[in-house]
Image 1 (cartoon, one colour):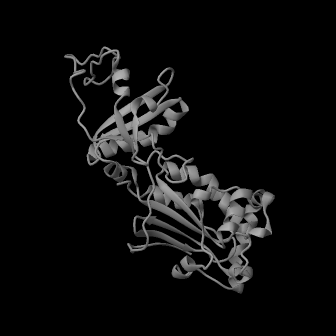
Image 2 (cartoon, rainbow, N blue to C red):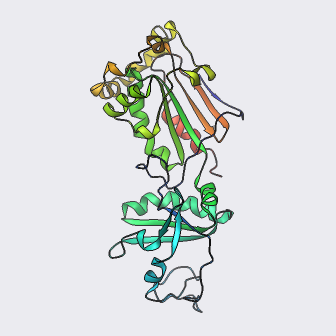
Length: 312
């Protein structure tokens, strides 16, 4: 049964704009957003009367005149990567010989108009990526201020039954296939299962599933706090489990590399049911308890809930 929830204080989580699916420590590509804490010198170039540019014509009347060696001059300027806060020079952000880059300089990270522009840039990032163009957004402020813009603070928390449940392997595969969609929406995906970390690694390696999104709860503490169902009848005799037959092909695909070795050593854990929760910061937006084994929340519904929540 699913419920839309009024605000409650639970746990907080974050996720980032312009995410990278390859970093285990952050959903944010460290070279997508940069910061400068110093004002930019205006001695090198200025706006030309009439709105023309020595570099390229633009539809805007606010184009600028810049010298031919601007890439060399700008290349030595250090800004800070949003994810790690480490300094990086402009010349290291893209291929200086053949690469193309769009560099968007925001006013500052607290500017509402810049948040609107950043949201537009995020939506366009995939288009730039497919064209082989690096998108770089820079703003005035410290790394912690940039992270306030980058973070959306939304998380989808999926609690599986246990790592040896073949219905959960099928659901984990569906979650993995949806992860990129959640990443692009600035929503962090967190998947929890009953069992020890070594059991979680079995699922992650054989399914496979990204380890940076997978967590183990061997003592079922989160399950108890959330009041998720537990018991023999729920696990083996609940009518809600019949819906797995409508996903038979997906189940067979997920079972290709299945192994019972992922089952918890504490066999009483196999009677645990899972659930799905959506958070915006500490606010719980959505809660669903699985009625029986294989009774999972439709991911399209979860994604639609995430998209209805304003980014800021």
